[in-house]
Image (tube, rainbow, N blue to C red; front, top):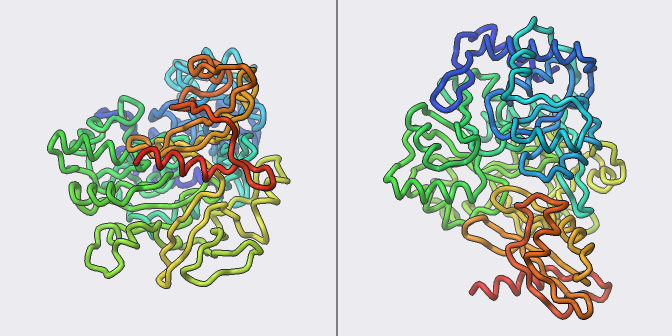
Length: 505
């Protein structure tokens, strides 16, 4: 089963329905959407793309992102969505590791890509892409449920990006969970892409294609609260994915405008910790428009969901506890909470969250050691700690992987630490997240200077920018005589985080 069949089927029975919109402008109905994607598949195959090859997408949000995505699938290949905010060296690593054969990018990224790769690069907003999407259509190349559809690069405690293999079966299962566990979808709906299409927002495109809903990409190509409110009011009912910090900004902007979210049907939030006060304020202002999901790249968007009714309910005796949870297991997965030995724990006891089911990855791309460490007898070890109550509601307690989630984007401390440690003024460093009302978390680096050195934050920033994206720079550098460590020499990041929280009081 090739997920591209969903577009073909919708085009056959509802080809005249509006499909792709850029701001207020309608660019394509489903017949044209499918025709352009199928023509792109022909162009790629004519250029030597074979079944199972990988094609990278490195672009800000644009309607043609979806054309490229489905065109690659029609050709029998897999997409490699790349965060457009990454540093060129980080992009180059993903291109090399994935073995990508072609790159689609926005014009703004072409100069950097041209310097760092010998691969053919086509601008999504250029004339070559128009030509590639204007020819004869290709038939859909058959794929199996366990064939690769989406290679999602995340990072773990090693600091090196790992490619999560998302198969056609995983994508279908996670998509079909959406109308069952998250939110029903109708042809009258519109998916509005406020968050990056290289992440969760893009993953939710497939189910909206299958139903025949509209797809609205803001003209800004990103998240502008006023633009989101205006587009929703004009073209609702809209549904969209947001990180908790985005929802906080949307609520603030709506209050300034006196806008109550006209046209917004559903905001699905996830990708980071949601402060209970923030979601209560959002519900009080906008009404019951919210659903929370919990997932990982390794089980994309499909571990648990906290329903619209649960988020809005204030009558249940334990409504506050439920609101602080991430909901109950979605239909295609099974959850378990286990101790250090892997033994199941009863309700109420905290342990590592494990999940298995169709949406769970088969493993990391070309990384058997990491796969073996993360998968056990079909179970995914999430690395997150939590507990489940008697009604099946899962509450996250901590993230054992030390990931910093800033503005809905994962930032991995070790990669920052490794670059800082190459600077001669740094003897030791530990990077942690500090609570931020604007971003959820922000990056802070505790640094131990080299003997006789006086590290300059501006110089350290410049040093980091030679290797990493700008958004990964620490918001603060705190000099410390020595890092706190346990008896085994491991840095106690919990102690550092506690210090930061104490300083905020």
